Length: 73
Image 1 (cartoon, rainbow, N blue to C red):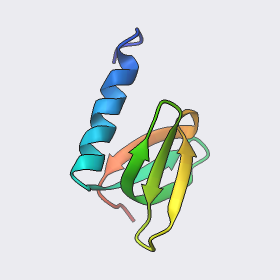
Image 2: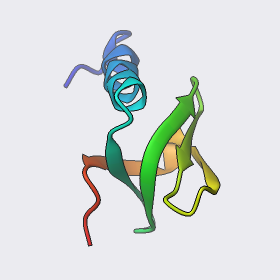
Image 3: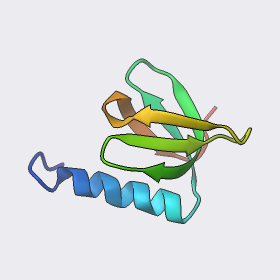
């Protein structure tokens, strides 16, 4: 994975795919919290996830460890 100026673009491309295709995913934060749902929006600093209960979770990108496609248990 690139650490240069294009590294963020790869991340944004993947987030765009997840958002546009309404793909279920699990966002895992650095402290181990799991937020399941669909990527609703994102910008340079945050990701908004719509949960199955129709609630929104705003997650700062610096707190994200992993984004996994699909809803794990």
